[in-house]
Length: 247
Image (cartoon, rainbow, N blue to C red; front, side):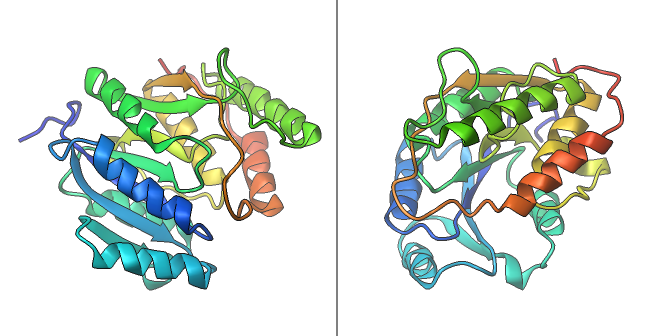
């Protein structure tokens, strides 16, 4: 039996909304770079507003030999926090969850880097950062949006009182599941991501970031809505002070 603070494998949660070829490449690359001994399964998560083309690719992948399980939000709950909590609570085959977007902003080959770090420090949240030295936001991204995102990340670091440099970039993250045995997420939209960071910070869980040079998504537009940005911002503003730093 695997101890709660040990590494006992990962379940991969691939996020998809309007991606097609990049989704196909993401799943197949993850299959190639992640060891079968470390990977329990791949779940493809899509919300009610998934595009028809994206859903067709999901069905195509499900029909192939990939050990994947399609997880449509509308068949579980319309509330994203509850949906994610059900994934976490029902996971019996792995000790960690790897969340990975299918938009191609980060090369899927880099997923192995997060898994390696989690093996060395199982009681840590491991992610990529565009804001730390050696990383960068996509070339060609609107300069105003770049400045806005950097300002948000600075605010998040101050409010959370952690060493995290890129609180917005949580679509490529790996974390242990055991802390959620006694905790339920309650926020919505991008607020969920900030809530996870705040919760882990209170527990004294270490944050490990690797610099990454993100690229513009190869296809489709971002599905992150302005409302979701505001949800994360207002959650930060009402966040009570954290007594412990993420270590």
